Length: 587
Image (tube, rainbow, N blue to C red; front, side, top):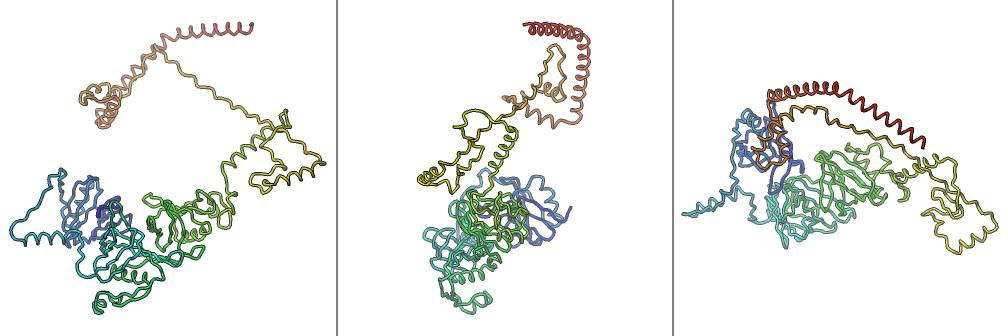
């Protein structure tokens, strides 16, 4: 047995949200990494106290309990995984993987009643609250921020900061967010340089009805100032936060909020890196799912704000692609494909941003689909890989039609058709007197046209060109294959081993499966034939071989007895055909 066991596509359920990831068992620990968020759960091997194998809605699952009181559930295993996981647990963790039968009939519903002293019920309630994921807002808040503008979920909320959780209080909804669910913090400048985004990444997300919010996005104005006093003594602040916070703070609102969150959550704040767009900003204006927003290239990924927010880490990106915009050549699309086969398309990016974004992606060593074709994005050329106008874009269909026209003209040669040349017009020929479409000379006024006609009255008129006759070459049709005429008197071909077996077992299949259709009989027979032992199949192969020999013997006798008869019929047919042809020639 190896030192590790790895399983992909393993799911974990947290507050109604399913996340898939990879689970690895090693001698030192159990590690689960979410594909969606990148969050890592690590369980040291000495802390593992119990393990259960159980049947779940999708395959099988494992329930792990630790000595610290934490419980972890992972689903998505196959039935065949039980033996190797059980053996690995015994050998490395000294833990028995017990099989647990789950009640799925609803018989475990009921009511718990307590009688006697209230201490029993109170102890039970305290025990439930301590084990359940229930947050109670007890005590005073460390600080309170009033009427902060929140983009997701949308509205204005009072944010109360507690030592272990964050409380959002709005007019309609309240949210309590434990700091343990905060994955990352982002502080992003708006493109207008007057506002700031503060983004909080959450896993599991907060819920509002059936909607889940994986990101909490706050919008601040840079000009908004705040003076804040924490509801703690200076000694408590110094002891608990070790100089990260002070009792009295003042400055821009976004700086104070981000500073407080960084100290309480104990997470670093991610800011944009060295990327600068065409306008000098650290973001790119684009659209995602028909909503306009901003895309921020970071040192380790991309983040899009704000509707819906998207965070993509470089380690989960399979490749990127630069594509021409669907409506105009003045913009392009930036496509990102993840290793989980999810695609994100950020459209309507200004073409001036192409060079900066391409160099950034190239420097981060991301896989680019159209690498080496930097100046070609769907046929567009120019200083930044684009044409200067919409009219210069490459039209593959038009080019193909031009090529076909040239081929037809070369095939026609110099032959011209005769006819009414005075009224004819050949769209394939260019006329110097007729301006092309979108030409600036096409909008000449009537008076200018009359003056031009009067000046050209004494001039010799150009002879009108005769239209060329386009002759299409007829393609030679391939002769049809003659169908073989089946000889009704010839012996029938022998059956295969499977067909012989099917004929011998058809009635048995019908009796064992009453009401089965013809197609279902064939399907059932195929499954039974696959499960047939090798010895039984060899028995039917021998029968098929005997039938083949009998067929060859009968066919040989048939040719010997009927060969002369067929030859006589053929000679008579040729004689009749010869006289028929002679008669046609005479007529």
